[in-house]
Length: 109
Image (cartoon, rainbow, N blue to C red; front, side, top):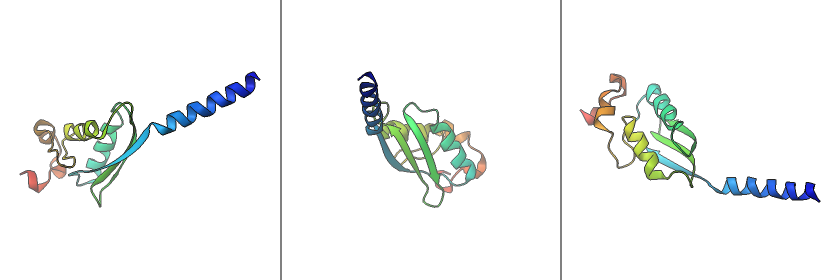
C-alpha cells in the first residue's frame, strides 16, 4: 500500500512540474555567434529559465521557463540587460556599450 501511494505521489509531482513550464520566442538584435553565446549564457542565470536556444538566422531566442517563477516580460528585460533588443524593448544603453564591436548592430549607431 505504501509503495502505491509513493508511486502515485511521484507521478502527480512529475505531472505538476511539467504543467508549470511554458515556451516563448523573442526576436532579438543578435548578429553573431558571440551574441548567441552571450544571450544563452546570461539567460541560464535567470530565475525560472529552464533552457534557451538562439537561432541566428531568424534572430529569435526560444526560452523554456517555469511560469510560476518568471514570465515573458521578465525574460525580455533580461535580454535587454545583456545589451540586445528583445521584441519591442530596446537594449539597455550601458549594456549595449559594453558589447564587442562585432555585436553592435548598425541600427543602433
